[in-house]
Image (cartoon, rainbow, N blue to C red):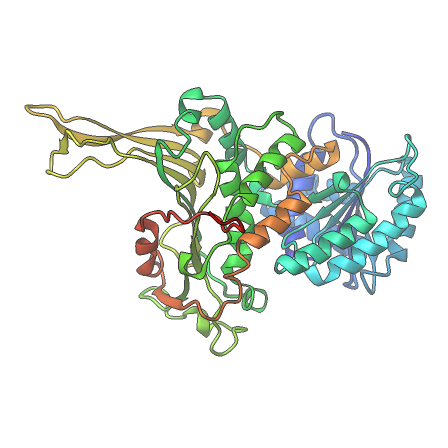
Length: 488
């Protein structure tokens, strides 16, 4: 890991306090890591001491010894205040001074933990400065220091805005130095999905339409939107969760084996999946908004900051169809919601039943299908259900389960942001979103975003969403193929 300057825009925000300071601490205190130099940037009237105190508070809440946290913060953190994110002269002056003071050679990470409205101006200002430094543009010397631009989600608000933002990014930075971050891709269990599939031939050989009936990807949250309704209202869970986190899980689950296990190989296969995915139609989505319940007298509409009569969805189930050789006719169900009964993120691969049912369960029912559940959080691991003979006379069967628990076997593993921050500094873009990928992900949902014709169903708090969801999940696959201009 090269010595570098890490410039954190939005250093006074919640993401920095909750995720980034702890991740930066753990990454930079690993054996062999260079001494950290972090320049926090914000519009708040802070100074070095205030930023360091905020970081110490964040670290100690996460279990870091206070003296260790304070020593790290005082050595690593400096602050630069700006009045606008398109006027970054104070940042560049502070960066140059720090690099001279610490004998750094000019390598920089620019991390944009900012509101989306600030992206265009910030990116343009950074690009112009880096062009002057000779790190980007048409005449970059071979020995020029590297620079990396990290952009937090959301990347755009819809397909048109994503294209506009990509145009601004590519006007100033080449794609190979841009890191669009989705923290789900940094989870060890998400990365293990690739190993699980491509290192175990008996699973990969069954990972097709011949053997799979459907795939369900679920991210259920027990928390609500109280306290962040000012952001969430008008955004909704389609944009906040489905278009990014769940779509990334979908692409990794459906992709073909890459030619090479590197950023280009993996991202290319994910883009192929998204390009072969039909644009979701309004009849392939169920939206919901949580109402009050026995343990939650306040529903979404009652939260401070929610507009009267808001149609913002807190729950969404979307049924996706792919037009490709591997998955034709297999529905992928993406489901997420707030105020669910339990917190769980998992991918369930439901295999087809035998063509002829020879056995029945001890209760007289047909056997259940084999289901492979890849649990991403909590209790990370996998569960595979299968049928065995019930002891005694006859051929009654019982469903049992094989299981593997990741933490029991390997112990605790790094936070997703730790993995991603280390990859950024190493220049490994494998776990980051390509610009084409971001646009295709918006295209898939373009017909259902802001579509007032889609009903938003109320659902009681602490339930699994609107009743109509199960009907959508169990619906037979459509045989419709992608539209074509050709005539028979």
